[in-house]
Image 1 (cartoon, rainbow, N blue to C red):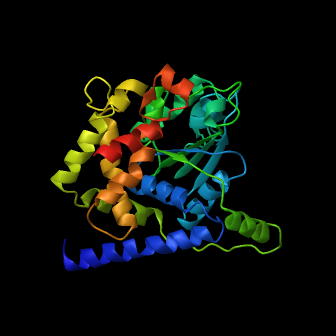
Image 2: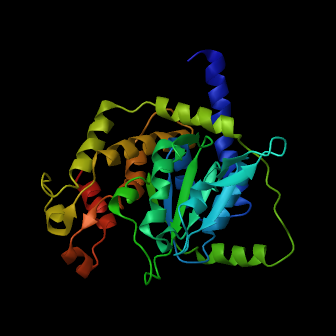
Length: 326
């Protein structure tokens, strides 16, 4: 990189801690989850948020969009939601000058920089599948025409782990499209006390715009240029391959897993490790980046067998066991 270009990128990276502080004006705690959402954005992927009601999932996403000056749309997924309610539909219009009638595509809420798909597991597979092309191709096809989505583009889907009656679990093919599976935990005692203190009065936080959409695109390009050594690439490859019962040497995996992560998991872990390096102000990947992100990258890409489900063994325990032996 030339000196001028390097200083420009350094200035952009220097804004990332300010972004975290700005989001922290509204969201108390949940720092790990906020970082992982930002990592997903820098890596150009999408993420699935899981947490019980009341953990500020919607507020977190809306606050991030405001601090980034990006358009934001929220879709509440329900059993009667149709694909056209998400991607849009054609409507019949009339030219007032000529009187001729024509069809015009009316864009749906997916045409935004940040789309919050709230409780995605409450809508049927037909509607869930409407997000597939958008997530992968960054476009919507309707009536034989392609409509590009705005960039940067980030889908954040949420689901409630408690109520499963009447829900439609995401199929494995769609789960794999999510770069990260982020779990939100309850706040600490002090954080919860701060929430009570700050949200039950009249004070309101005024957010500043820290980064523009164009600057996010530049940071996404920088993320892909971050250095990662061949040694770390090899360790990522071995970790992903070790999750597959047929070819692993891990007795733990053979005992509890029915199938493991595919090649997309390795790609996701490399990109997310690079994005975390950028978020931490570095230009090369460290082993701690891989260890930190192995859980949200792999937890939804490993299928546990019936025996594991009966015993309460989760995919996180598989990842933990593999990291111990690596």
